[in-house]
Length: 449
Ligand code: GLN
Image (cartoon, rainbow, N blue to C red; front, side, top):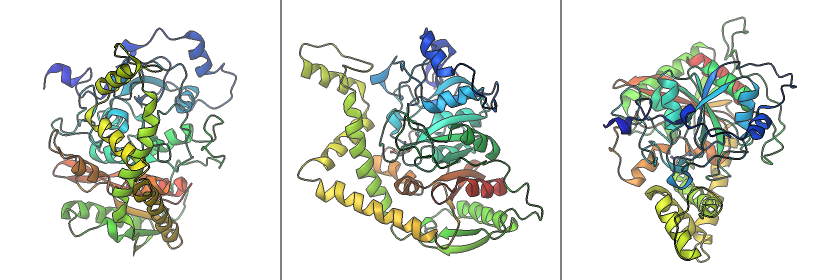
């Protein structure tokens, strides 16, 4: 790879850093940083963090990995970034990503692919691949990503770090650029379970700027079972292994790593049983109707008038067309076309409405299974990280998300914890919890470390 392709950090994980700092609007920055009158303990004092490039910052560009937002600097800051800064963290970079979050390898970035620090010939996963790579490379211990269908958990698994998708509504989406609003959540990466727990504690909670955020109290996620005196932090915790996530075709070596994770949970006192989520096989088709539908609507705002790039031309319509044709990459264009198609009058009932109905069945699978178990354990992905350029068929790329999109469709929290290696590359074990069950999910995650 040429030097340009390897970016400023050798992995092209970081898109923008101090070199790109805008002559920040001093007032905006002050407003974002607060006046110091809050009494929140500074839990991240001086800690460097990185933030995915679809999360708004007032001093660094926010481009979503897209040409259409090249050079764009937001006039306001995402709530999650404000909370990090209020806790004392220093945002040192914006990380590479698949354009607008659409992808599973970070190869769909307009600024070139990011690479996996454990083997730079392989992808870091995506779409939050830059954040995962930065944490795995040791550049930062904590980074923010975003999830619509697995974009934190899958790259966490590929890079051997911890990645958490919170309950829908747990973390504010204000300032997270919308991809598919009913699925999107900000997620956190940590080098360890404890780093991720701390990061989530800092960013979680009600935000008046996001009507879908909830006032459910944020408990402590830290410490795991350390305070449990008999050494059995998961005593009486029931953990289900959903059989649909362990197909016969699952790589035997990966299966072995998950079996090992099951042993660790049992040693910590958990009871483990087999369960079923019968609508799992419908999750990918449902996701790839609903996510593009919402995306086609959300991305209508990039018209060359209000944001970012504009390609000059004679008439208004021509300007729209040229701006969007030149500004969006191939995968984003594909999603907009799919989304527009499934929402069009003649097909709405056949695709969009049916997908909504099946989404409800998938959500019901989870609420029913959580009547009998407290948590679920699955592989995060069907394979370890693949080589750059190895997956060219879009559908094959979509299948990377087969174990992760379900949690987004149901709105439940889920996380990936490193579970050893296959062929020298990391794989992840995924924990899934009921809505707002993050504290118990973390308790189990500590036992897996
Ligand atoms: N890989 C999935 C997609 O391409 C999920 C992306 C995400 O979670 N942002 O849509």
